[in-house]
Length: 219
Image (cartoon, rainbow, N blue to C red; front, side, top):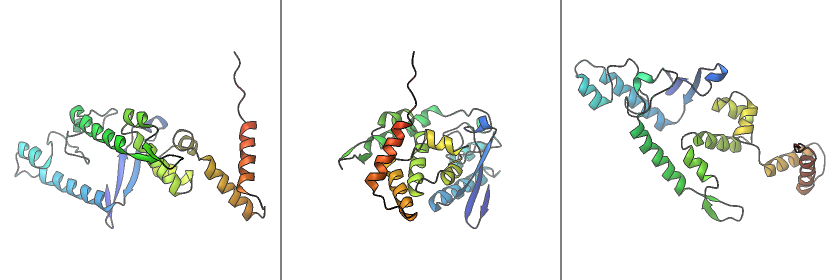
């Protein structure tokens, strides 16, 4: 970890991408609140190593388990993950605290309301998936948010989110909405001097999609 001009640059062991031989990923922390939390945790770790405190005091005051050379950046040592497993292929969790954390996330998802096509508020349409995968679903939220903000720049979002390929991001996390694609194509055609309407482009793209549907498998 490096601190440059008030920005933390982290190098993390990434288990999710180790299957493609990518064992680490890097990230820069631009959010000031998160940066202040990192600073506080680093201070606690430093204090917890101070010999003027007993092992018990180090753990109770600063969340530092002196039996380990590695320490948690998120939460106190052993609060969410067992510190002795941090550099292992499979991390060990504190199941009690993780359940509390997951339950809190699930309650947030239950309270979220989204606007449907008729302008009415309703529960998340994929609520069951959110509840079954409370942590992983945040990766989907990240993908959709930044794809919308970048106007579906898959290259940029794949790089930010550490997806190995653009195809993986598009196929599994964030396919471009048809209406957005139609509006973009209409805009590009007009820039090329073609005077076409959105409805014409929509009809053409729908026909093209239907004609290119894969043939159903016969048994």
